[in-house]
Length: 25
Image 1: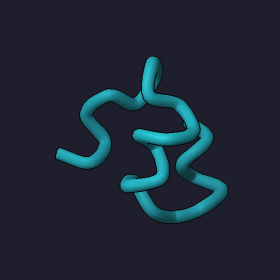
Image 2: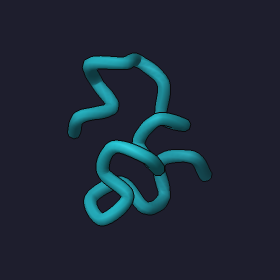
Image 3: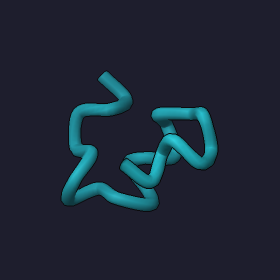
Image 4: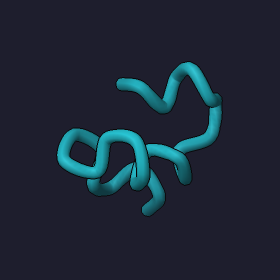
């Protein structure tokens, strides 16, 4: 998961929206 690099799941919606569609939830 690319969000691991940022440490913020909110970024997951922008970086890997297809892989991390529910990270922000």
